Length: 436
Image 1 (cartoon, rainbow, N blue to C red):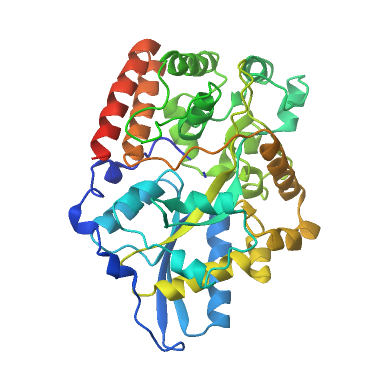
Image 2 (image 1 turned 45 degrees about the horizontal axis):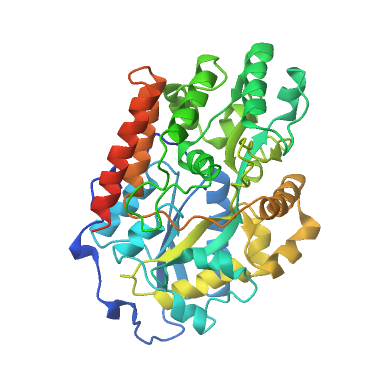
């Protein structure tokens, strides 16, 4: 999550998914029997960095070499604007056969009946999930239908640059640090080195973690409103961001928009102009070609002592309900998940593989960054609680409201209390409207 908050999916926000016309009848998933060797062209799209694009295209070529009747129409993308395109395709009934799907949006597309239920393909072992953690598999279920096959797991983490911490005269962070420790260290880095302490604090992932530290969830169980009642949760979070920004230890939103446009490999923590960044645990693997020396540590803990981490599905593959090639799409997904040679190419870049067999195959060849990521998975398990349900319909609008209200406060246009109240009012209206 695995992402720049500047995008926030305008097309999704317009409600283009809330179309009666984009839903299909239940019979749409019944695929006609076809000649096993008949030519098939699968359309596929994913988001990611250039390195992900390169190896994924290599995988598609490998699959075609193994199954010559199957070719691909690939559309790689950055994260920015990715779901704008998916939304427009859903509205126009032109979704690709296979699409990389995020946990934040799987409910929206599932509830609007645009994703195929892949349960039959798991039942008949076209997609073999025998060696996968079933709790993780179930994160791809919405209303009892498996609309996403989880590709890998990840967890929220601080990725830090040891050299920057050394220059600032700081000890390396540990899993025992608190938010007070974190804030002090980030400001010290700025004062001692002139660099940012923190590259970014991504609201879309960090604020739900912050909420979980209070024993609450971002959304209510029925998805019709926010899951926390006390606005001090928002106020404390926003004030922390403001203190860091005022100390120039954190880029302001406009500065971050300029930074993120250059890609992850050029982010300050990678180039040595920031001490740390808040991202998912596969961040170090993604940028390892640009900087192989980054390290992982858990996000800070609050004074509540509540374990707020969760084992997050890094991403899914979903299949369009309108696809005429669902069986072939399912076969490809199975190969992507379980083939040892394919996974040597993937090399855990998308996160920790869900198949225990694949993990065992990869362990002897892990790089230092991958080993850190695999080890961090054990830390997550020890320090996590049950993942929140998949985000409800309307989450893109809520995310935009979160960004807008936080930024309004950061730029001094509102008080923290006003932003908190505005966020609650907007979010509850959005969630209530989308639940009908």
